[in-house]
Length: 425
Image (cartoon, rainbow, N blue to C red; front, top):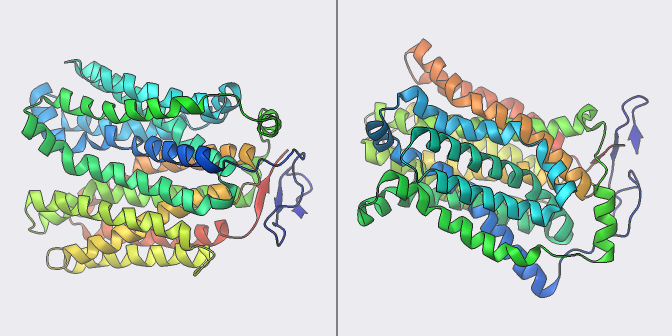
């Protein structure tokens, strides 16, 4: 174990058997969930994750209708996308405190309550209610984003890769579902945009009901771990390894959200129809489901995590380069490469949070740190890319910016993939 003389942080290398050397006070090991409880808990995690994107992504296909009906400006409408990302980042530090105060099960139940409340607010025919509901939904998702990796670390220690794959696959699946079916549902049912957005609250209600049985007392072993988790980790922000995990999370988020905001416009400007350009983004999200599930499952079996991080960046680079060279003729190929690469990247970012932390306490704190900086950085991506386009007059320079950003992303990925643990006081 190496430890700097003044940092209060240690980076510990796991023993051959997988356990880390002692860097924090020892408590009885939590063996994780088993049997029927593991099945129910795993299904609960999947349903929770499915709710972390639809209520927000569903706004994008309805933006034209919302603007024409409410009279909102383009700038005001863009806030509906930026506000949740800012919530994800700015509220991330609050999540570990809530987990320590109320327990992870109760806190996660509360996130679904917030999503339901926010969705209900957006039923009101008011722009203020629309923004208020969006902020409430963003707050619920922000807390769940941070706590779910810690839950996976605690209850699925032997299947962290598989559960991280299912978790990130559910994130992509929920986003793809919302992007693909929101408008067809509105048209088929003849709903207003308020009622269409509210439909996604039904998924949150289902998750809330399924999660209720998890809100109960845990075993004595889990209780000891919970008592340890009551103490916040100090000094984590001085850990180079923690910053590498944070850097990877932030850079891949920036790339994903900046590309998602402008790719349909890029393809439309290149000559693709508006409907086809929107479909290409949904198609890319569908491929992202495969990439997000496969990446953490094959880490350590066929490829090292650092190699996979580099491979994911290469796929993204090929996609961006293809959009620059032949945006219309090769659109399906470029969206396939981007979907697989971006899906792998988000899964690895979440897996690094789980693997680089020695226990649940550190996982929650590392998740908070990575997502705080990651999503605040991601929130700037669409605006910066748009400003670069306005200044240059073409999409060549913005695509070059996205390509250049992949270089530090790979560097951070190799650093975060090292088989070490962060630990603090």
